[in-house]
Image (tube, rainbow, N blue to C red; front, side, top):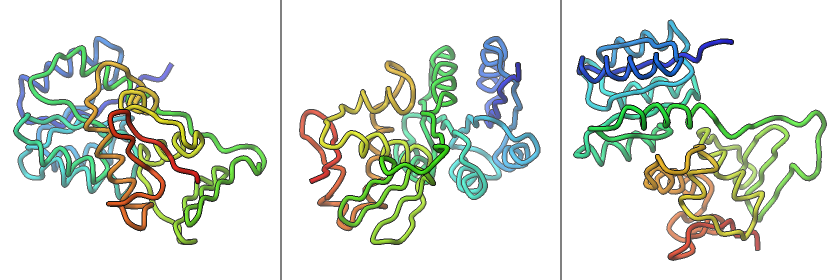
Length: 232
């Protein structure tokens, strides 16, 4: 059975080696980089299944590395950050990061988050076109045969987690999902996530599919409960 490969980009040697030990003990193949530039080079050379990426890195910071990776790949990216890097975390998620964990962290939790982000919500293309896989709501169109999303007949690009969130919500119109439920279903973990991850991805999704993100037509907040897709 093929070992899944994890690229770890972390400049602090103690943290890098700690992550390496726990990942190897969990059966992962690891590639270690000490700065952002090296991390990007190793990414292109090794084709990892997931990237653990520190935000504060020498030569090229984690935000820049994430941007470059997202030009060519949808591989899951898990950010590492100090709690003081709050604005950087949000920017990283906006630019295509899938999840994050703050330092200091429990290595077992980090491994659990890696496993969760590798267990992506399955996206499979049906063998034949099916009318049930075509959804049109006002100016928004979802074609789940080709996974094409259009706003006012113009195709838009969504990151993996944004697409998965939209599909889940749109296929369950008017059903209210809590933030915790969304994290569990999309990220694949119930107790290890930070709900801010979901909120940032919902915000990103609104900016891409809503004509007025401040007054969303489709992805609506149900105060005190969560989010729902308004199909009316």
